[in-house]
Image (cartoon, rainbow, N blue to C red; front, top):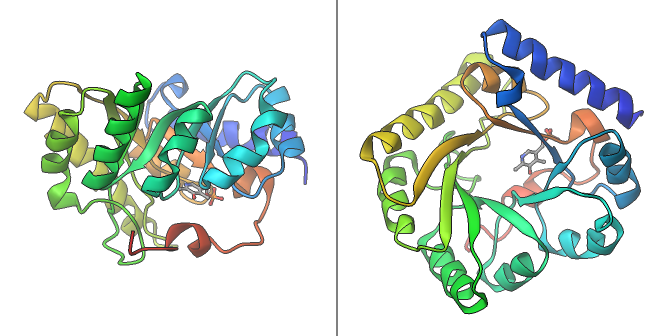
Length: 243
Ligand SMILES: *Cc1c(COP(=O)(O)O)cnc(C)c1O
């Protein structure tokens, strides 16, 4: 597996997808999903010019922090966030939490931000596939949820995030992405203070072309760059669903 070649191939896929729908490739950011990926491999990607990573586990953010500190990069949190991990997130230079999906999390995040005199960007995670196993706010509750979160002045909503349906049927996957785009448009119409809707984080290794066709501004790619992971994704996506 050659990380450099894989990055080149993914960048090419992004460009081709943009070309096919007359979008400017500059509108689409590549986020490297680095769960389970060791720092030495992430450094190869940084040396190849990549600057945006996403982690799912606070523990991994902490364990990789010192080794990656010398490389200029931005780090987003893309996993399920437990309220007792908020402090760690704020102490490790996470610039955006892409997975805000509960009011109690927003409340506790805001308390901590206020206490530390900090601010943070977030995306609202929406469960567009109606799968019980996935985190995220229900589509029909999204606009109301955004209105509530917008009142926390240190939390800046920048857009929406979703994990689409896992399916080989492109049109079913596309429906999820289209729904996210639709919710973005509905939210924009509401003109909510302290809310921006510039970012749509959707699309992964298997479906990034479809996501770009439907308006993605951030695609989150792991496997296509770093190879297959030993853990199944359910380990990251459904653990502690009770939280
Ligand atoms: C792992 C992960 C990705 C990347 O998935 P791949 O199929 O490996 O590209 C994207 N988003 C989230 C939230 C993830 O956990």
